[in-house]
Length: 145
Image 1 (spheres, rainbow, N blue to C red):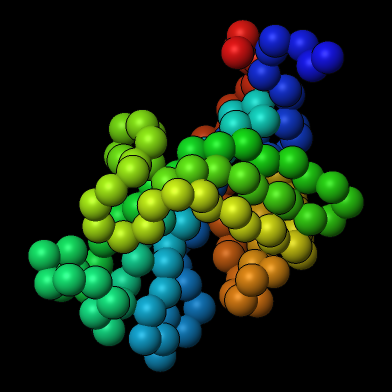
Image 2: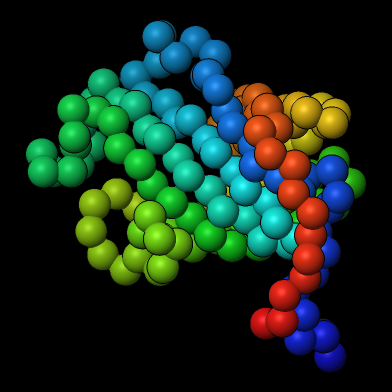
């Protein structure tokens, strides 16, 4: 049986990480900037999407810029980051309807580089690189589930 306490996660990932810019963003028809918060084995993700193409109804398009959120858990095995999360509202409460994506956010990333202040992730879905910079180091204090 698993203990009724949150897992510790990975020490090197604990913190708030921002993707300050996206390579070739001026040439892409759409791209997403990421903000990750890793605390213990939990992850909170804020995504800002920029799109020149409207994939949604007009009331959701917001001139091609919108935010999405997800909350879940992560695990690192070898050189791969596995994230299992759920799309949420801005307050990280589950989202079951509305604009943009709902349901599960399942992503796997190759960890191409890790240092004290930089994480370079490569999406195994679309091979796009996400260069993250540490903005705030956190210490895991496991909470009861």
